[in-house]
Length: 351
Image (cartoon, rainbow, N blue to C red; front, side, top):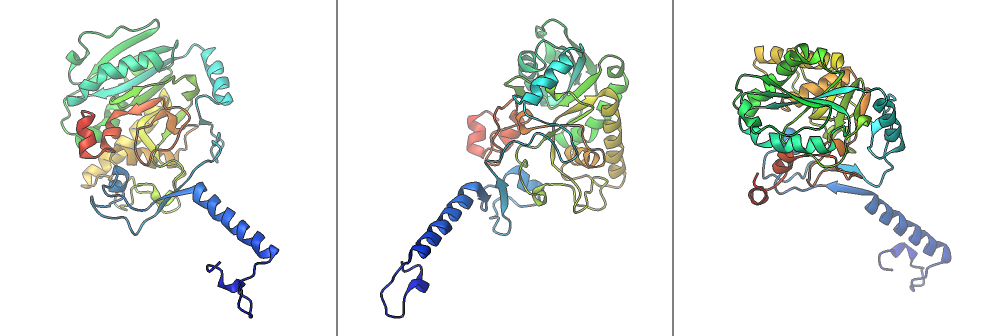
């Protein structure tokens, strides 16, 4: 009872009344509740890429920043503007799958495969055959500088086809990120626009590990970043450089979206890709490049044009200390998972 000196009576002995005992129990219960309800990341020995994006140097202690994520919350099923927030096993997703399946839709899945990224293609396609719109009509669009990466051809199921769109070699990730939106714009214009109703753009260094069905279809679809879902807005690595076309003002933005998977109606995706490519070209002309590269421009666009369907982190996930807990992991980013590991673990996982 030395922790509660105010309970000491003038005569000396410590006495606790029944009311005081109840008060102590209540205070203790509240303390336990808050400790279990919230977790804080206050010190990282080797900062995660998210904190690199925030401008923090490797090896520094983050004593001036506390990132808090709420846990144990009920899964949100709708955004503040009324768009569905998709979890694959929810009753709403079951209804959406049934609705779209009846329409007999052909959907495109596009990946950019240049340079060393060819090593991921076969794994990506094999997993997509197992889990991406199972039983649906799908056309894979492979934008590549090396058609030999498809030899020998992968076996496809009924109503599935693969088309190769040759592109010039783009060495270096930064140059690739600068050109990806322009390449997507050109591919949608010809041939994609006349062949499919929906098109999704995905990074090739990923693997489908659980069903991704028609619940993902929508006019304009974005996927929540798994490390930033549930984080406060001030943790989002939006572009803050005012000279950049991707700059996001204080108070703007609802979520932070990943560039690992996004899509929608062909017309909507053409507008998105064209707008982002023009913003990138504008910044290049001014000698500026957003710190989040392509992802920064994607998030800028999705603030101005909110998505009509938002996919939960189930549809873009990787194992890291900051990744949100999800009921099911459906699409795993192998590349970003490697980025989240220290050097020793990268070697162990052949990163």
